[in-house]
Amino acid sequence: MSSTDTPTAVGDAPTLAARRLDGLADRAARARPADDGDGPSGDPDAIDVFAPATDERIGSVPACGADDVAAAVERARAAQEAWAETPAAERARIVERFGELVADRREELLDVLQVETGKSRRTAVEELFDVPTGCSYVASEAPDALAEERRRGVAPGITTATVTREPVGVVGVISPWNYPLTLSMGDAIPALAAGNAVVLKPDEKTPYGALLCSELLELAGLPDDLFQVVTGEGPTIGPPLIDAVDYVAFTGSTAVGRTIAERAGRNLIGCSLELGGNNPLVVCADADVDEVARGAVQACFSNAGQLCLSAERIYVVESAYQEFLDAFVRETEALTLGTGYDYDADLGSLVDADQLARVESHVEDARERGATVETGGRARPDVAPYCYEPTVLTGVDPDATVACEETFGPVAAVTPVPDAAAAVDAANDSPYGLNASVWTADRERGAELAREIDCGTVNVNDAFLATWGANDAPMGGFGDSGLGRRHGREGIQRYTEARTVGVSRVGPLTFPDRIPTDWFVRGAFGAMGIGRRARRGLDAVRRRLSRR
Image (tube, rainbow, N blue to C red):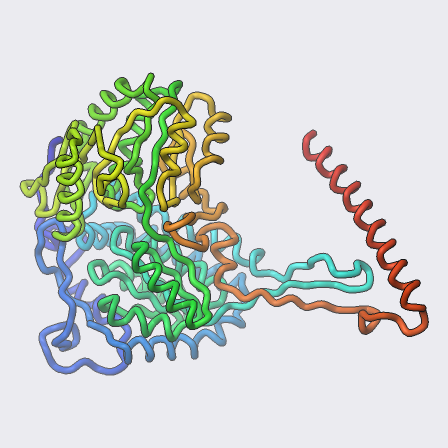
């Protein structure tokens, strides 16, 4: 595994300067001017932000408190009323314009992404590309997804039923550090398109991308105060944010997700949670092992494994095991490490010392339990302070930490199984259910196996883009991997309250005065039977036509 030269944080970034980051920090929502001090706008309690690639301090952002959150939500709520009355098509045009600005300003956004996350330029491009494509989908789909919808009434011809959708009000978005643009904007943009205001709390490690997006939303024409960014520590500003808003969208760990769900439940507000995973990858006997090895490298090591969709458990049918393992190790060893502002490196850095310690402890635990390190297995401070080699393990004890918990690093365990059925059983032997992939020459059989895996998204002959990139299809987890869905119409409509309006053309629907009740009851049940038979006939015709 080779490496590229390490940059010196902001100094080497093609389009960034320290004063630009300081200017972005001033965009954080504050309830009042900060006291004199050394931080942004003189805030003595500011949070320092460090570049993982060099462990240099690159700036600081305000340490917002409960008062700041309350003020931000109050401003957002005041602005939301007029925004909800804005036609959905006009809101969509602003969303589309924002996506265009992200594409136009991509070089600066890529630099910000790399500075605050330490990821490779290639991974940063993959993340950035997701934002304008998501905006285009939301802009195209939101007006129809939010439009009034006629439904079948209780008595067709006599009553009507119409569903309207109203914005919930103010949405709180709590986003993580690993994909700070995609996972913040992926939740915020559909909320805005649905007529809500948004208060975003980015991870304190990666605040600058969110702050830059707030600037671009303003340039796109979003009215003042509709999108606010509060920077600070999660335990400090997370609870008051949840208590003040009308809906919470969170991406992060399962442990924190449980806490957020509990608080949202007490407040009787909705929430969507994309949480942890320990994702399986299944290799069938007939799979092209060279193709699978290339796909497995993407599945396991994208963003140095700091991806909630990453595969960490690989189950290979025994007849293909050795050939696959050889190919997978070979592809893994060909990966390059680096954090430069070019496209030479495949993998970048882990985000900080805590993440590096987690990865090292998981690998060491596996070793102590008898696992073999086929390649990798060591930190690479010569590349970056928190860089770790992509690692392939075999012979992993089923009770090892790496087999049971999410490592969230560039580590994959490869295990032989007797057949595809055993691979599916092993894949499902986990409390998590976020993402999976199945690799086989028989695509139809692959789709059948995919339906047997207990995950919210399952890819056949692809790592994760076949499902994640399908913006029209819902994405989310089963079990301990969360609840709710992003993407698709579901990802827009989650931010609305559905109202049903029923209209009777004949007045009150009750027992008629001029017909004996027993006659009416017999007639009503007779009509019900006729209606059921007619409906079954129509359904049968539709099914026959759909098969042609």
